[in-house]
Length: 474
Image: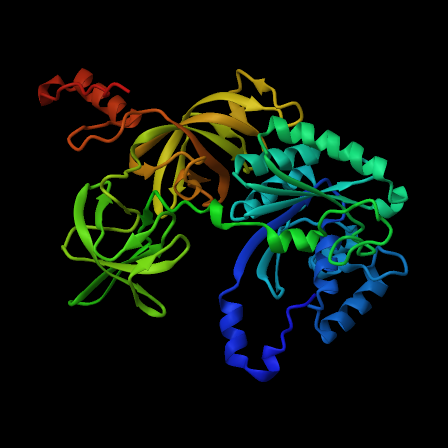
C-alpha cells in the first residue's frame, strides 16, 4: 500500500489531478508516555513506502547512535527530531507529518504523552478530525489516557481509534485486548464518545498497522490503515449555518474591494443575501473568487474572496452570515478552558482574546468548577487555575463579538487566551453556554470597566452632569 501510482509514469497531469481531489484526513496520536506513538507513525510511513532512500540511510545512522529498539530500526526517530527527544526517547513537542495513499491524503500530529506537555496535545488536536489513542497492552488505561480522551471529547473530535499497542509483549492475547477494550469503553461512555474503534497492534513489528497480522487471527476487524482510509468525514461538515469570518480586506485599486477568509461552515452562493456582524448591515454576494477563478458557490474550508453589491463597511474580525441564521453577538459567555500558561489564571485580570479573526480583550469573571480528568468530578471553589488545568469559567469581553456554542460550530465557538505582556498564548477555550440574550440592534451594553468608571465619575464629579449607566438585564 503506497502513494505511488501507475499514472505517474503514464500521465502525470492525470495523477496530479487525482491527487489534488483526494480527501484530506487530519489526525493525531496521543496517549500515555512511552506507549509507542512515534513508533506507530514511523511504521505507517515505513510500510507505505513513503521514506526516501537518503532519509532511510540517515535514519539508519541515527539508529546506531541513539536508537532505542535494540537491533531493530527505531522508527520513532522519523518523528522525534529534537535532540532532547532522541536522547530521552520521548516526544516533547507536537510533530507534524504528511503522507498519502491511493485513497486519501493525511496530516498526522504526533503529540507528547507527558502530563507537563498536555497543552501541546490540546494544540495538536485543535484541527484534527480523528484521534488515535494508544494504550500499552502491559499497562491498560492510564491517567494520561483519560486526560487525552477527555480533551478529545472537549474539542469535539468525532472519530476515536483506540490502538492497543505492544501486543507482542503480551503474547498477542485476545483476553488482554478484550479487557482493555472493556475498560476504555466505560470511559468512552462517560465522555459521550460514540464512534470508537479498537484495533490490536504491534507498532514495532507492524502487526495490524498497515498489513494484517498473522499473529492475531482472532481479530477480524480492519487494520489501522484501513480504518484511516475508510472513516467517513462528509457528515462532520456543517452545511446549514453559514459563517464567513473576514480575515483581510483586499483593496488593490479603486474598482475592487473584496473580503478574504476561509468559509468556516455552511454554503455561500452568488446572489445570497448576507449580513455583516456586528454592524447588522446587509447586502448581496456579487462574486466569489478563488485561486482557480470565480466560482458560483463555496463550501466549508474553501479559501475565498467575496465581493458585495453594496458598499457597506466590513472590516477584519467581522463575520458574514445569512440574515435568517445569525449567531450570538455579545460580550458574555461560559466556556471550557484548558489553561496552558506557566503562570496561573487570575480572575479579574485582563487578557487578550482571539476568537476566529477577531482580536479583543476580556476578563475571567468566575471559575464555576475545575474538572478532575481522572474521575471527571467537579472541584468547586477554585480562585485560579494552574498549568494544564481544565475548568468551566465565565468570560466577559470589552466589546461585542460574534460567536456560537462550540458543540454546534467549533470554528466560531473556540477562542485563544493571550497574555498581554508576553504575547504568549496561555489558554484555549470552547464556548459552552451563552450568558445573554440575542443581539438587539439598538441595545447598549457596558463592560464592567465602563460601569465602574462611570460610577466613579458620577460620585466624584457630579458637576459634569453624567447619568449613572445601568447594565442591561441578561
